[in-house]
Length: 226
Ligand code: ADP
Image 1 (spheres, rainbow, N blue to C red):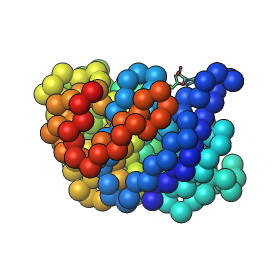
Image 2: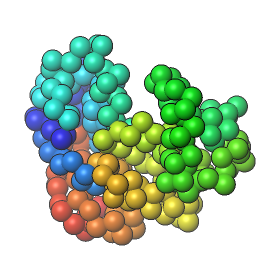
Image 3: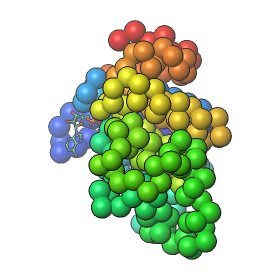
């Protein structure tokens, strides 16, 4: 479902941010990507969402070969990939419900679809009782779960979670990890980056380690030792 074949990305003629990275992720897998700041994790995600183009190498996601991708195909591609970030990027003047609904509105969903879908997604992330709250009234963990709800509301095949627990205290971090596990159980491929070794050990999932733009290890069980 996700295939990177010897992908290299060089920004501005500096050294490569990614160098001949090959990675194959099956549908419904949960993969943890670890690596120090600057290792190239975000670059890999930006290549997947087509915010950046590779300097060389092949990328195929869900049967779409990026080499043949036209600009008009990019919205279709991005619908397959939900993204959440460390800083939640919520709209502060909208309620929880409206933040999630907005992702559907801009995708052209009907009011009936929105009314049907948003409560279900808020249920998945455990925020039904916060439907009418504004972001400022939420804890960090709750905000992150709103961001996750927004990312999955269009039922992407892949969810990229780029250090989603980085700003959270441990209790709220666990709430977010539990939600990611649930979404994965429902059949979504999850790519997670984290610096938290406890989370890696707990999840016991495949761990891909990136160092200086290269994949330096790829292990099936979460026993990575920094
Ligand atoms: P990570 O997400 O693992 O912290 P990044 O992918 O953000 O790593 O960065 C990898 C390398 O690429 C770093 O050396 C970073 O400075 C560089 N880099 C990232 N984005 C850009 C950009 N837009 N322009 C130039 N260099 C960049």
